[in-house]
Length: 230
Image (cartoon, rainbow, N blue to C red; front, side, top):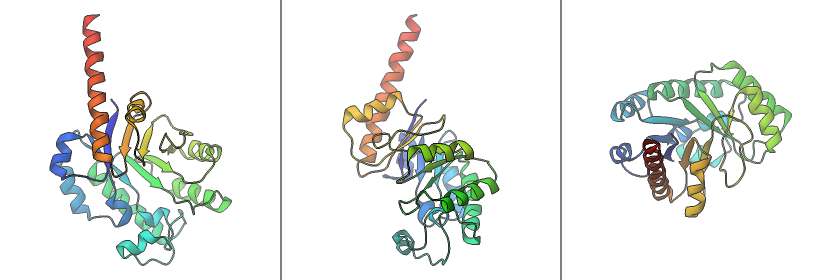
């Protein structure tokens, strides 16, 4: 079954847990909550509810990023998967946080300033080659050629995460889509045929997630009724 949710909680957790089956945790990107908070969320959610996690910006974004200043992070060297202490300490925390949530998918989103260069490719290979593969890893690249993304994802066993209305996925047997803009009903409905996960990440995310979930449930009901008639 295709899973539908939002990037972050657009409504209270209690209401969200009753309406959806998955959420992409956004706070972990900016300044992660404590492990105790992760354990609390896991207890609050239904057993079947799934958390996916957006990796801490300390791993993917440089200290010059405005998102550091937004949360008061003061780190001299980090980001771009560099083989430095801050990056691996950030990963160790995200790993523990994700395990506390019983998450199975972690998203690494890189900024446009993370260029398609030999150094960045080398850092990615060193990073993903040195950490345990306890999760499914997704990579949302900005500004890279699809062929370059395909090669890296294939070599490092990463899922290419995209907004399918902007670019097709280059690699991966799991389709994890993040919808960043307002889309028409026809566009949203088309996701029923091509996605495993649809995570809405825009001002209309609650509305659009509810729409798609309604259409998915209607389609599954019709398919079930058709099967019973055979």
